[in-house]
Amino acid sequence: MAQKQPIEDVRAYMTQMRQAPVLRGDDLPRSGDLVHLSANVPIQSGAQGVGVSLDALKNRFGHPLAVHEIHFGLSTVGAVIGVNLTYKKMPLTGNFVPVWLLGYPDIKANEPEDSFADTLTGTGDPDRTYVWKLPTPVLVAPNEAIVPSFTHFGQLSTNEQVRVSYVGRVLTRQKMPAKMQVPFASAWISQPVGPKSTDLIDTSPATDLFNSLPKSVLVHRITGRLVLSTKTDPQLVGGAYGPAVYGEALRVDAVWKCFVRIWDSIGDVIVGGGNHGSLGTYDPSTVLSTRIPWRLAFDWETDSVLVNQILPPGAFYTVEVELPSIGTVYDYLNQAATAVPSPSIQAQIGFIGSREETP
Image: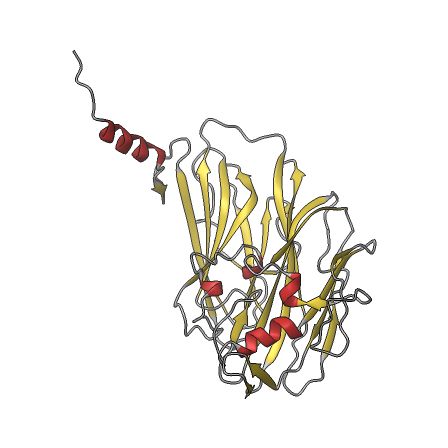
């Protein structure tokens, strides 16, 4: 008579079986195995269209590879590096998208983009990883690869070492489908407003947040983040989160004094409403004009607004931002005005969606 196996051993065995191993190099995969492909590339400040060696990113497993996540490892914040991605002749991005706009921030896990120690100069975490969890997996055929190209936007004079990684599962029992969903993202970056500038109103062109594809895109969300910098301490603000510099004063002032409006190409307002008079004031009791504070426009946990809207070919979103020239801010913790050395503010906004393609 066979001896019964203790239930604890069975649970441990089943847990082990559910945890697919991470494969690297030329390991032979089994169906469902988790694969991690990585490549590194140095990018000089201001460089555009820097490619990556595809040998390390190519699907060498002889079966379809379902890529679920794309990771970007940086030594600075994701506002500085933009990525353009294609698979075969299918674009995953419409232009160079700042990598921090692609994924949701993870507030509970205190991911780097929301770390209060983060700075553009890299004095916070030495290595930051931004994760784009694709709205639908990209099925990569054998001997093919998702091709990345990078741009350094030049907010910093320092060069950057970028690591791009694809995380997915090998599908040994599945053939390439006749049709599949492919992600699509596009972005716009405003002009910066500096300490000696006048208050800035900037509007995105029709060619940036634009559906350049010959088919409709289902837009899932629009993400917006602010890049703040001072003479002594470049930093970032994502939604209502960012480094605690000047006792929270700079970021708190920024998300309330920066205003935004977003509408589509037929005039329907996606983000807007309320009334603001002079710069930095807001009256929620009226709905006469359009731009609203950044803090009210984007969800504070996701830095995004959910859209779920069909964007037809040739259609686009227009963003209008109103950025203040901040010389002093009110320190809400110490209840006093605080001088800010040479601040500047820049807005970065992108949309993320998907569409059906024939691979």
